Picture: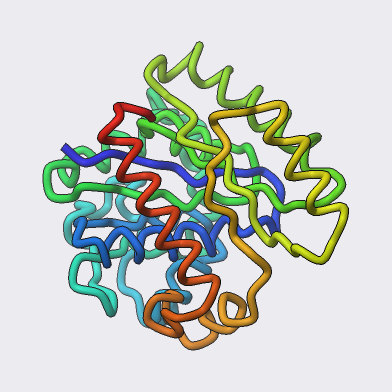
Length: 258
């Protein structure tokens, strides 16, 4: 059965979608079968994988509302072992429509169920908020990865998302684990980045990934070409850091973490 990992942080601009795309692609390079579910109405994970959102006949929205079987929405990407369930702007309405639904927090979990046996990993890219879509992603997940930008307000945002995860654990998903906290946009020339890194590692210790995602031009360019970094520039520091992250995730499974 596939392991479901949600990529979550209520702050925007922390590298959440970049992580979702590139961790999924890096796992696929390791010949793990991977499905990325784009749960963000902006659909950046979809376009970052080369999907034209305007040409879609169906998206994750139609699976959440019961109009389509999720298996009919899966589309291929440029990597053999990497598939995608795309998002569209329709997803904005999903949170409103789900408010009246019975067991609304488990809508995504129910939709994903038919796919779990087909993939080693199901990665969910969450919107930058703590609304019903994110609660659905956390309720469905086995574990969560929290990308954190190495900047001044990092600890404040981390505390908020950790409280939300604790609430979900108590109310909807007792088995939910923190897979790891991922330091992103790390600039080795910046003293503040080092201070934030040390503070987070000192406070959260072993749940912080050893892999660190640097500020990297290629990582910024890749989405505009509709490619994950391993297809755009595999020799870049950004690609190497996500390949290292994928290995950490695989090793976590071997150790029974997350």
